[in-house]
Every structure is written in C-alpha cells, then in structure tokens.
Length: 90
Length: 229
Image 1 (cartoon, each protein chain N blue to C red):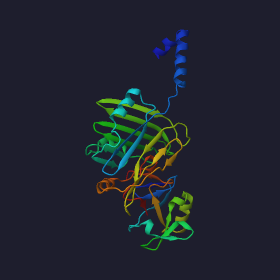
Image 2 (image 1 turned 180 degrees about the vertical axis):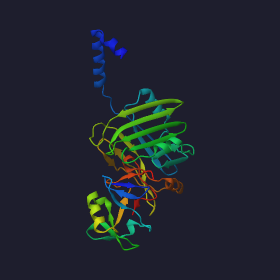
Image 3 (image 1 turned 180 degrees about the horizontal axis):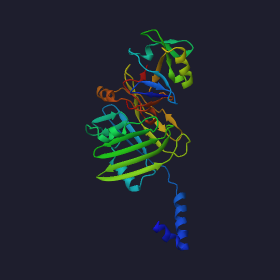
Image 4 (image 1 turned 45 degrees about the vertical axis):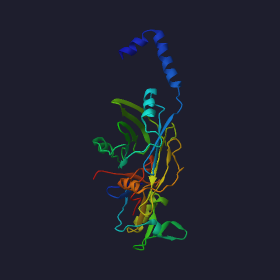
C-alpha cells in the first residue's frame, strides 16, 4: 500500500483509496489499551475507538474493513514494510 | 560507425575486437566498499558505499576525502529525501528541491552526502514496481567531476550485490529518542539490525526534529511523527 504524506491518503498498491488518515488527537500507540489475542488492534485512550495496525493486513483486508465500517481507525507507521511512503504534488 | 567499419575491414582487427569484448566480460571485479563515519556530540553516523564500479582514481579520492572515522561535524541536515552531512551549516540547493520528489509511477530517490568542499550525490532510480533499476554515483571534488553508474540491477531478483548501509535513526515523540543502526543489503533485500541504542543529546534532538522522514528501505525513517492515524 502507499501512504501519501501530503494528503495523508492511504492507497492500495493498485492506487485505490483505502482511507484518508485524519486523527485530530495525538494518539500514542504505546499508551493504547491492548486487547488480548489481538496484537493488531488496540483501543484508543482518547475516543475508545479500536485502532487497527495496518502492518498486519493486506490491501484487500483493509478495504473490506473500511467497507464494513467507514469510521474504522488505522495506524500506519512509516517504517512498515508493507507501506511505501510517497509525496505527490497537490 | 566509421571506426567500427575500419576494425572489421581485416580479420586481425575482427579477432582483436572480440577478444577485447571477451576479456572485458570475464573481468569480474571483486566488490569493494568504503566505510565512512562521523560523529556529532553523541551521535555516530556511518556510511558504507560500494565502490566496485568506480575507477581507481575516483576511489582514491573517495577514500582520501571522506571524513575519517570519529571526526566531529558541526551540523547535520536531513531535508526530506536528501541527506546532507557537512562541516558547515548547509543551504538547500535548488537541485535538491527539484530532485527530492518521487511518485508512484517513477520513483526517484536522491541521497546527498555533502562534506565541504566535496559533494557526493547518489541517485536511485526506481521503476513503477518500486524496484531499484539504476544507481548513479556522482562526485564533485576539487572542481573535477566524476561519475559512475551501476546499470540495471534489480534487488528483488537478487542479481547483483551492491550493499548500501546507512545508519539511521529511530525515535519517537513519545519518549527518549534512540538511534538504530540499519544495514540495508540490496542483495538479500534484508535489513540487518545490528543496532545499538544510545541516548541523544539535546543538540542531536534539535537536529532530528528538523527531519521529516527517511524512507526505511534506504535508511530512511521519520523521527518526529512515527505513525499516522
């Protein structure tokens, strides 16, 4: 997948938009409440939403998550192996 | 063409020509690497560069001109995709701005290492599949211009071996930044995590906060905002 740092949009490898990353809070993954048997998911300590670590999923699975719940929260780290960081012109 | 025609006019020239090609293609060079490293107050940088394709003369200059291990530098600036090291406060040059951008259809990543008065410019060309297809080394030293390029190697197919090792930093806004030493091996497509963690000084943190990000696969990563939500 691709993360465009200008628009904060997360795309599949085929260029399909998965989600635009936008969190008004300043989340901290380390402070999130971990969930037993779900290393890929934690609960946000600001809004209690579940935050899914995209490192554990492929494009298709992420698209499916967004389809089922458009408000799903993702975490994308810049050092993830399955993410390519891009910066496209506005 | 005229030159080639002259060569092929007689049989002797023809044999010499193909013998030269055969000799050239069989002459596999052993891989050579130059290591350079330098330190700020508490931070060590290391840079490994493959010099197999460089001429002896250029290699000599590289070895001689690079800052010896342990020498302190006054400032380090990393500006988006460009990595700059220098003994002086650097100005962002126009070329850097022009070359820093890359996109999904044609990845171009540039890494500049600048140590006054020398400039080393490494340019990485990627295809649409994010495979490294070409690497160009350009060095401008003592007013002279050297260039060497390694054509068409594809690290996903693990053909050739060019090892680029760039120490990089890994830190977060959440706690005390630390730095890791990454060694990215294009041959094995792996990152060697022979890192050691050290605490950074305030000055180091000040520099690091200027960094936007460094792509992980070329030693790039980001320091102030590690993750997006």
